Length: 278
Length: 291
Image (tube, rainbow over the protein chains, first blue to last red):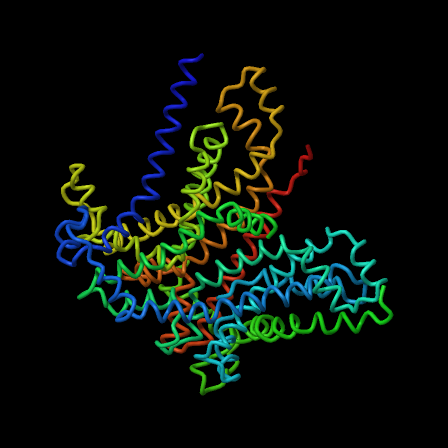
């Protein structure tokens, strides 16, 4: 009996270690390769660099515009995220706490947005944003990001507001607080766990978004990160400068790794509660 | 509660409604019409052609091959990814050492953008600078295929990357379910002399239906999409061997300005996702077990 369980513990560990290596090694390889010369990349793919080529990073940041793509991404994602959270929270608060004609209907109307794949909307969306003269603008992309994040965020936050106690809200109203004060000073702070979950969930979605910017932004100087990376690959920048592309990938990966390790519990629960409710 | 509640309801709801109506509902509604039109470029206007786009689809080899690839993903990805994720989740929840390390590690690829992952793996698979080919050569395989350059192996290579990226995500979803199963059930099973395998199939799996349902819906959506990973790794090539509906419709719409035709492909895509999701919901509909 003991012999068996010991064996199974060893075999379990073997499988788990093997998968860890398969998950970690490609990323580790990418990181140390980004310090190599192109020569080394081609002729000894497994070897570690003989000398650290820091200028790969400099070329990636400036010549390959990774710095610019990063800045563009932040310019789009930060306002889009804040707008998504505030607009969704306002709508969710009303849907969760007020009885009025059409409440259910509106809730399901927002919910229905989750039924459709974004690919179905691409052509009409492209034409609409063009009519609004917002192709190739950050504000166009921001509004589209917000709009497509609303259904799930409202759905999630409506459920969340419903679970909050009503006493604080009522006593604030009795004390003469205006509805806006009640919402911003009482309800939003109470809802912060839900807002954090949705913040993480939407941040990752927006940060990694690829197809929407691909369709709505065609001006190279406005590319966001995912789009810029793919563009670097396509224009075969690497044919003469592979090492810079490795460096670019490393630049992208390291911050997300640090953020992930710091907040991994919140991130995992943010993403999976998102998935399980949807 | 308030004297005039509509003075709150209207300003609080309208920003969401306006944005959602304009950028989400309106385009989806338009798409339902555009799929039945011929529309070649922004300067022109759509012309209604009835079912002509769909008739053309039936005879379009590119469409059938893209659809076939989606169907292959729809079969392979749930089996391999969810099977493997269940296996990992089961092992990690069995009081193993370093389980936290494994959980954190396995989930990480899910955080990265599919574009970054697509580029990373096209390096890994690359015949000269990649590590995969030389690894196989070191293991004694003299002439390994050019993974992404060979129509016979390209689709499988992309599927493998998707498994690599998403297994940890589904593992975490299953772990959430497994950890909520009361210990007493496992103890009872152990007293009855159930081994690990029996415990897994008779106790764990039946109690995971909720998580299984969400996972199936998620992986269906993933297998129908595959756009980012395909577009960065192969752009649907070589020789259309990795085309999926999403890359095909993107190509028609934004490289050839065939807006109507592209949208009819998107309609097929939408209908498949819708039917599959409804089927999954229907099939996995069981009494939820309360503890």
